[in-house]
Image (cartoon, rainbow, N blue to C red; front, side, top):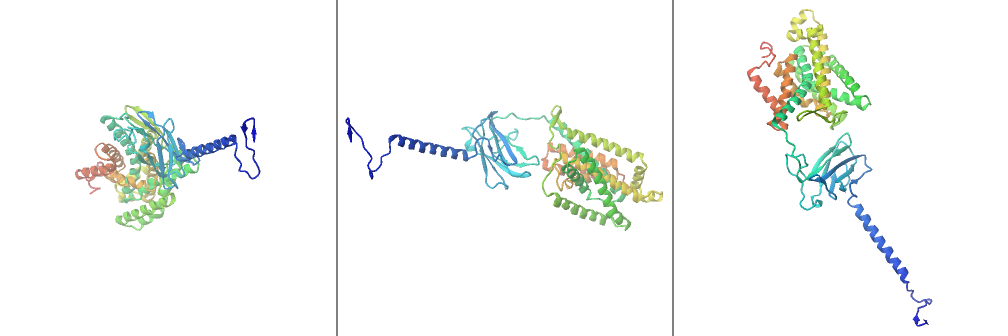
Length: 456
């Protein structure tokens, strides 16, 4: 059709339809919007959108990435772990922060920084004298709190240096703290040896028992101070039960000391693996184990748990000294430790006194285990066994069978263990204390407070 010089097409039946230009433009716009939307969704899907992933999971690993104090954006962090089906990735936000949810606590995870996503010229700091992360891949453990922080520092980092004198003072204070804790356990071990002649290898499990008992009370909802009192009371009852059920019958049968020592080793292994069966192989924490440090003077800093531990240890040792020197049972204990036969001939009920010694020694060991749980920090099924040789070293160094010798020996061993890390690796610090013990005993076999006629 021609109208006014303009040709137009009228659609006839069966004639192929030609779409108007307006509809074509609308169709093109729709396709372009769809493509852009799909592209946007794919960008948001992999890796996870900036700064957080798996936010619906109950636990998390988070941190920051910075260079010379300035945050880095768009750096890819990947977290993998045995409890995660697939690795999870995330990009750091504008402030350099990132967070990835994980499904389980008390589990280990691998955190990796993708160095290819760093700005040009940036690299991970590899300097052992700095507080920065020294690798692009780090293994972290999500503890009982369910959250852990891991920061990556790049570029120049301010060095954290401490003078040798400050390091020595700090380690001496930690050594005294450790020595006081060790003394509470060693005194009971020494008194048990002095009154019965038993080298009780199961004393380490009494230490562990105190920590486990306090953890159970806390998990039941008891306040920490009630948990501590209850754990010490249960430890005392545990000592009474072991003496009544095992050691007293063996004493009445006049069992030899070698046989008694073998029984104590077997009992130690049985109880230790019973602990593992009950609580597993993980590490648990008591409330306050992660309490912040308080700056005292110079570079010396202690947490309120450390200060309370030292104060309570000194108080308990003073109470024990009064009990041993002033009470009738304490004097009878010293008499039996000096000469059991003469004490029995003098009318002292040796079995009753020994029973009290087991109760007191177990209570002190139980409280020592609680302090050891804070000092490590953490509660494990084999935690008492880690310091068993140190307890024997302290009692032998101070003089077998003497409470005062155990106290002095424990303080010496504690200070030697902590200060030795200035010259030897931390993994060898316990070995260093045992070497010092051997050297001292070469010159004084009976120990510091021991007597030659009692210790060959």
